Length: 372
Ligand SMILES: [Zn+2]
Ligand SMILES: [Zn+2]
Image (cartoon, rainbow, N blue to C red):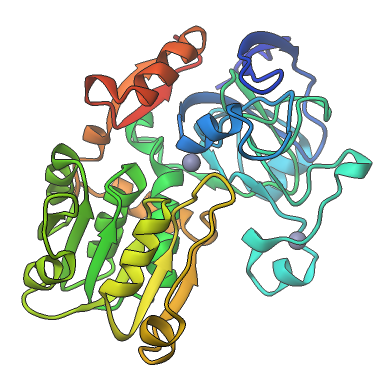
């Protein structure tokens, strides 16, 4: 299969804080080590809205989007040989471009890569769609676009040819969920509580179930989302807004015992406090929610931490999560398509953001289709 190489690509660009444009960029032929990916679908993440609002540094002008899947449009000779890829193959690319040589990369924690080569114009140690400005050549560093530049550092995963993109587009949030579950060392039979029924939270109930959790309880504030979690592996749900005694309600939902593992994915300080209070003595607390700004969280040092010895385990990005995520998406265990509620073209990104901000039309996960 041969796809004609495009000369230009359309991109959504954040030229500056609170500004959105749709621009065209030149598409150079890939170098020997590079892959050019045609973006099929890209998920819109809360992070993208935080970026636009200027909550995450000053990466402008920025092409946002880190939840992309697509197919190989062209690739260099060495990239084809090294990666075993060919034009037309379906792929997912991890958002982080690790250097593969710093101490953290070498110990396998590449999500914590310590390199930052931006001074020399290289994106090593940085993240697609988050902190690689469009001014870095060739400018194709975000998923809200028709094409994406994939250099040698990038981690590329092959997607099964028969996995629909509508399902595959959840691979990054599901990989984040898998990492959170792995950080919490969720083992068969564990009682697991997940706080925050957004897309990643709901996918975390699925990942916990897939890891063998004995009982999974979802905690949140919106009933329709909590109801959806029961289709993704939650045995019971608790609305934290309407329950008088959250700890007691969760204990009852867990069958009369406290949680072995609590995974917080709400991204608010109150949820992180709840997570520490809800876990059993000596249990594991995974803090996976991004607050999107500098938010202090305070715990009672003796009462909540010292005398109860919970393991506090922050979980950042998706390292190690893509392959289990692809395996789970390939099985029919959960109705993943139900999470993708809205689809927009690149020109309609402002409408998409308004829909998400206003929580309109029951939006859960909205995606952009650059070919629409
Ligand atoms: Zn995301
Ligand atoms: Zn590194």
